[in-house]
Length: 229
Ligand SMILES: Nc1ncnc2c1ncn2[C@@H]1O[C@H](COP(=O)(O)OP(=O)(O)OP(=O)(O)O)[C@@H](O)[C@H]1O
Image 1 (tube, rainbow, N blue to C red):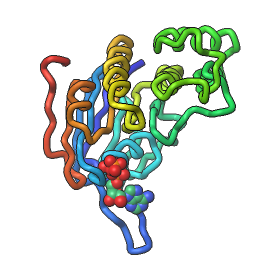
Image 2: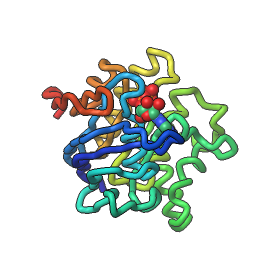
Image 3: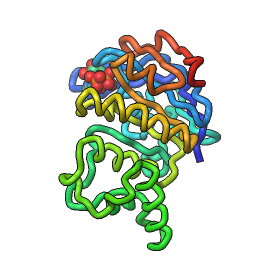
């Protein structure tokens, strides 16, 4: 079930040999359940670090991360990534090459009974328009099809929140534009709360209900897009 995301006075920093390197300062964000936000900003402003902290891969130095009623991170609490119910579609989380498309989608459903896994996988493949591609291996799919399978895999366990880190950046311009619209349609159709990271303003505006502009680790703007929200 989709949930609201709340970042409250969030500060993040990396441990380096020269000491703590601050990356994000006093970031606040309130995203209602079922809506899509985009963090927009130039390379190095801290967008990916925010997503990594939400996913549970980075500790919080100050502030809190909440998903619905649950406190995911604070200076005292750090829920492990697998307990957060946060789905990810990151560049580095490419498909497993030795598994078929269907096996990739079913990967997050390992603890469910076989019949339930099969039914959910079929539903997700149909949702992303690849009902007939379940038996294919990733190298037999186009880049856009691979990203749609990655989306199906991320959505399969019905996460409270989906994180997308520049998921379309390796695609050609036409595929990228088409997929941006398709993925938005799928997420809005399922009422999925999601946060996208991008440095492309056009993509952010096409995809999101809210755009948060980041500069040097701070949120300098938060805009609801009337045509969407
Ligand atoms: N593991 C790390 N250790 C130390 N510093 C890091 C680490 N990862 C990232 N940084 C630094 O933190 C800052 C923010 O990085 P981040 O990846 O969050 O930026 P970004 O806005 O997502 O950039 P891009 O669009 O290029 O991915 C950068 O200055 C980067 O060099």
